[in-house]
Structure formats: C-alpha cells, structure tokens
Amino acid sequence: AQTVTQSQPEMSVQEAETVTLSCTYDTSESDYYLFWYKQPPSRQMILVIRQEAYKQQNATENRFSVNFQKAAKSFSLKISDSQLGDAAMYFCAYRGSNYQLIWGAGTKLIIKP
Amino acid sequence: GAGVSQSPSNKVTEKGKDVELRCDPISGHTALYWYRQSLGQGLEFLIYFQGNSAPDKSGLPSDRFSAERTGGSVSTLTIQRTQQEDSAVYLCASSSTRAAYTGELFFGEGSRLTVL
Image (cartoon, rainbow over all chains, first blue to last red; front, top):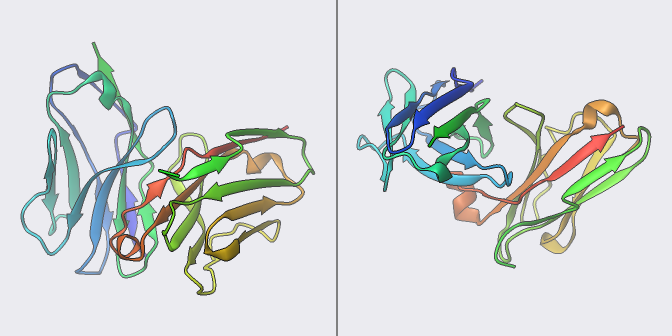
C-alpha cells in the first residue's frame, strides 16, 4: 500500500525568506501524480502544485516549486519570498492507479512578520 | 455556484443524535468525494461517487455512516447515533472526470461536527 510521510509537523520562516517542506512517499508504481495542497484557516483545501511522475522537470507555479526525486521517492515544496498569506497547513498527496488520493499528515507553516 | 458548497459550516450535536451534512459540488463535476479530517490529522477517505457508477464506500468507518448523491449532483452524508469520536471536519470535494483521473480536486470549506 502507498504511504505519504510529512516529517515536519510545523515549520516557521521569516517573511520574504525561502522555506522548504518535506514529503516522502512509498509506492511500487511507476506512473503516478504528486500534489501539494494548502489549507488556510478557512479550511478550504487549495491545490498549490502538481507533479506527474513521468516528467523529469520539476513543476513550478510562481513562487512555488518542487524538488521531485523519483528514485528517492521524495517530493519537497519550496516557497520563495514567503508572504503572510502563505501561512497555512500544507498537505502532500499521492495518486496512483487508484483514483483515491493518499494524504500526508500535514505541515503547519508559520510566517513571521 | 462558483465553488463547492457545504452546509452546515458548524454543527454541534448530542451523542446519539443523527446528523446530515450536505455538499453541493461544482456544476458539471461528475466525481464527488467525502473526507474526514480529525484535529491535526490528514484526510481520511470516506466515500467516492463517479457519475452513475456504484459508489466506493470502502472508507466508511462503520454502518452508522452513509451517503447518497441525488441526480448526480448534491450529496448528503448521514451519521446515525453520533459518537464523540465522530467529531471532526467533514470535507467534500468534486472534480471533472479528467481532473479526477489526475487527482485535482476542488474542496468545500467543510462542516465541523462536534459531538458532546
């Protein structure tokens, strides 16, 4: 069975600095998708970025980028120029051949002004 | 509506009572998911609807939990004889058929259930 692990329950970063959130996963599949979702205090989960496993190029969305290491089964999220609005819970998720998403436990990101 | 709508936003009930939670997905979205999120935890899959196919109920924790989706649109999650361990945020998500395949879900703001 697939698993997703986020080893950092909480991270903090100074506003305008860069922070990296870690995620590792376990799977025997070769084709899958990985996601980072953000959950602000409003509780509404929002997709931040998506990576397709067959693509070697790391996905980037404005200030958000990933470091996808397929062999190491690692999928970290880098947030550059952190802003106060980035404060939220961040969840890493995996989707393989099954339509279900497998979720990590989340990392709480605190932005210090 | 523009997004996934869930109601009620907050529900406080007494142990043993039944509750209904409603989800109104984005118009045209064929896939609908229910998740449960306990405090400080990730998302626990409950049930999945896709079009007219039989729902995947494999995540429902007990027979006190049930869900239906009428007309391929609005869904209701029902919890009978609520227990204190049912206290959680219940999240609904929907997606188009293609987005469901790639895992891109659109979430509502959830219903926070507190069982006293």
